[in-house]
Length: 89
Length: 373
Image (cartoon, rainbow over all chains, first blue to last red; front, side, top):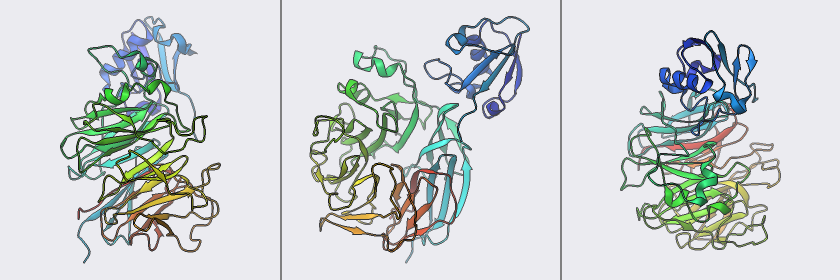
């Protein structure tokens, strides 16, 4: 079971900020989150399945290289943080 | 005698959307919002075929594009489905579309209720330049291959705002005739209900490439039809102000008498056939220096009138391409949103101008729903 913490700004799309989920990689984890919270669909990944530019994934506190983020392996007891970059004005 | 009813001005801004409401006298305004906090709302579109229905095109650099729908004049909103650049197709896209199909949708630009013979359709223009149609209140969107897979597409280029499809026009006198505008690909015209499109830019100059009068590639900014003679169209292009009197088969530049005829907006009020309104800007900084002016093109006289008297708004004001809209009342109302958040308006056919007393975020778009005549 992977522990997932969602960025506060994702409250708009997901009812809970901390959830547990079964997944063997980040892509599967996002699939599961989108299944539970349909409004997350297309918000973290675009319609081509790629992470949106300002979405960041951290695995056990370390940022996952976005080029391979979706295939990054997960193990039981891992913690995944999904955050967004600060930008704008 | 004034008509009864409510005039609603839907304002899309850099930080959400607003609804400014007034009775038909249009003297006092109430402002509701913001809706869609923090999102860039490029356009809102009231659907005159369904009382109270409004669509909104919102964009977020974090979370991507979103479409919202209201059925109560904009008081409450629900997210509907976004369009997708790659949709399930029975056949593979042609090679000319391959490159574009690898890019996701960047921004939603313009929503337009369909023509009279399509009572349920809504159209949506996006960046990268593509046209989508929904027939189920936005629950799903289907691309329009006659435009999206156009043979000239590999040679389309983006303008400063991206490669956006920002203008969607249906000829009210001929349901099969329709137009779209793309920056910087120009206007495209269909005579068969959107199955096929062809460029409609003859006579429009392009200053930024070696061939100055190409078939397509113009950086069109906004086009509207004359409310009484739909074969007449008014065009604000990157390279000037143009009028077509033959259903966009050819264009004549009419803006040269102005000190600049660069700009982004044009509107033609229903109550004023033969009159179109433009807001010229300086092409470099893209603002009106010292004092914004709204010019009225009078088609019958083929002459211009400056409608803003004195210097009521000293400073440098800018306007985005969706920033000017007209209501359907007589005398006509015009609503002009600036990039610094002023909502200016006239309720007497541009004899006098005022300002809605509210400081909005920078305004992207203005749309109006008013009681029908």
